[in-house]
Length: 307
Length: 307
Image (cartoon, rainbow over all chains, first blue to last red; front, side, top):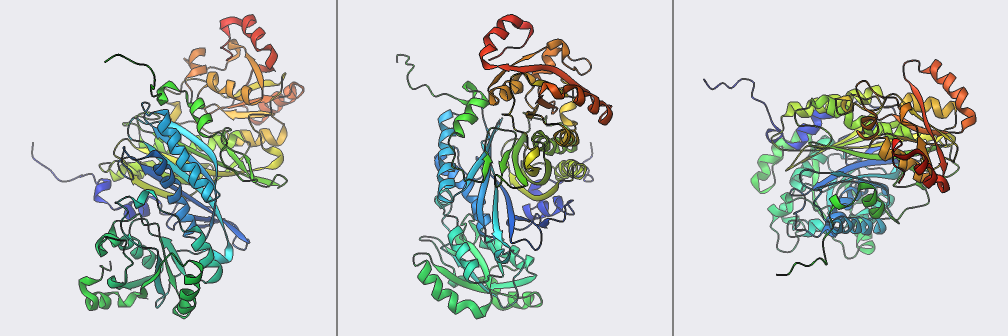
């Protein structure tokens, strides 16, 4: 039979996740109380003038993708819940109630499930989250843990990805890179830091670093209709990490935010007092969209590619 | 080596789902605003005296468990969302916002994902649900679709599983059995019916039939601290189904509820007017716990086993 090329079926591997999600979630039906739908760290629900808004997030960890079969299930449980908590923090919010779904092979030892829940409970206690639902299903494949998490944020403190403006300074908390060496199972979502930040300063845009700065910063910049420039030499590296690892390993779960330049000095002073053990690093700034090309040719390949 | 029996590791296959969930979710940390946690159809969140409470539910469908790989993805998407909608209905509530998580193999055709979302959108439109989040992940195994759903219910209309009393009559909506022949992909969650019911009558306990009457009724009875008796000859069977199929196939997604006997005649008259095409069937009643043994020996094996 002759080989033909029409009607080739595209697979998920041909598309990036961003393109897939953007396509699937385009023009979804939504009611008036949905203030922010799919596309930011969390959905935002409420009346526009209400004092508080509700935040909603769902997230999954999959055996063989987000953790290895031999991993300590307690740490996997911790990670599963803390990933979603980190997204609530990224909006300036406080986490509230979690619903857990586990799909597990029938041959899974009951002790492993208990260890998983021990990790979930530990994270729930530390971040004052109530686990209010625990569904289980059989899985003919790997272990899946899905977390759906609610939270809330005062209207005036809610920070989206889309509020950044040219000239805003870009900061990251903590140090980047090293997740593959184990940090991805033990990270601390920055709830306290984000709550302090939104109460005392006004970040214009914020998100958590889940896929790595090289993937996540372009998302924040695009949502804010800006370009960006980052000085690689400034990146706060975890011990033993290269800048490439720091930008692309992902799962740092640190905060990335954009702040008006006029607030920079006050923020840096206050941060050092408030969180003396957690670095806060100025890594670059947002630029007008019109300057993206110029910035790219000026900075060349030492800076990471502006898409 | 001699064969020893100590230290045998129990697996999920050795435990039922109910026992597993009960063990995992025992004594979970929860705040004061969690009115009902894991164990009912939905969690109930709010201040005790508030006019409205929020309902939260999560549910997963797994390829090879809840649907076959060759199934039309549109119907799978419909099913995934409607399962969770059915749980909101079972509390007397109205569904509101959904978060979708899909974990899919990289080789999945993009068209299949779009068809899945077409089914999700269709269900969302029909039941006025806003899809506010769409996460995707790679799966090294089967396709997983997790739905987290919020809803709300007026305080005075919220129905739990636990309010039934001895003597209450047991009703089911619709007809039972036949899910394996395809109905499990096309069922209609009984939102309108449940809303009408809680507004006009006062069911004392209610749930949706997801695992089949033979599994679900004992849960409602246990939550209400009652026994039950059911007359098999009364069961409303779908065409071609045996009573055993009707009781044990599961995925009927009809309502099962307990109502004070004094309301029965009025309910049956009003229901016929309101929903002339959907049967409502009296199948039995709740009995005191102390009579469980007597009921069992009196009715023998024609009635299904009281545990």
